[in-house]
Picture 1 (cartoon, one colour):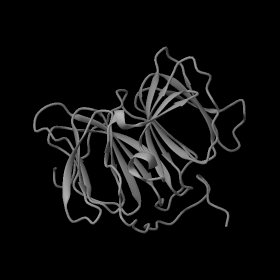
Picture 2 (cartoon, rainbow, N blue to C red; picture 1 turned 135 degrees about the vertical axis):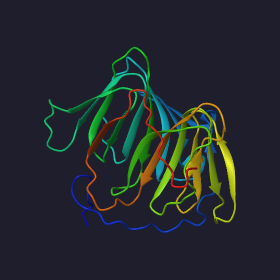
Picture 3 (cartoon, rainbow, N blue to C red; picture 1 turned 120 degrees about the vertical axis):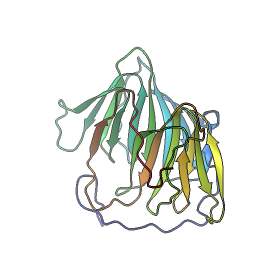
Picture 4 (cartoon, helix red, strand yellow; picture 1 turned 90 degrees about the vertical axis):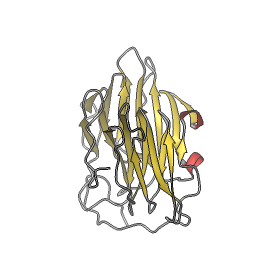
Length: 261
């Protein structure tokens, strides 16, 4: 059966089976515990991946693109979501039927969010004199699985309600400020609170109760990137490329949880 690719058709929503156990590896991974890989563009620090949390379906990494490197054109099976934190650059892509000399382009600056679907040829070029730093989520499964990131700000003592998902895994990357998560055990019988250090990440598996919050009653906001890999798309088409510019500081206001937590 020919698979449906991004932009080609509609996919029904189907909950995925629960893994047994729901998770078995680490939940919080500090930046100094990341798997460091040197790349032609610079450095990749893999925070949430098979090696650290035991989930081989996605990777959440901090990428550092160095200026002066020759940009590589990439066309790969993994889809990816890039959220720029620092630096300046240029994104170029060649979806199907786009002329070779007229790529889709977007400026890369703090707050820029770009999702690139499977097998879309693209590249990232650093245009400033400083490194370009981004949080990147890669999905290692075929469409309709796809990744995305979005930023949020939690004021002191605020956070999400406790919840779980039947069609996605999530990562909680703390850019700045105090961050914490509540995570249940794999059987959802007890919970524990874990602090997430700056530029570290927390893993939130499917079918496991969790919440993210700012643990300080007073103090600075928690600025974080919510990384998500959705395994079953809810009916609509996923474009080959999705571009969104958030606030220029990269942050967006937090949303209101129903309980006010």
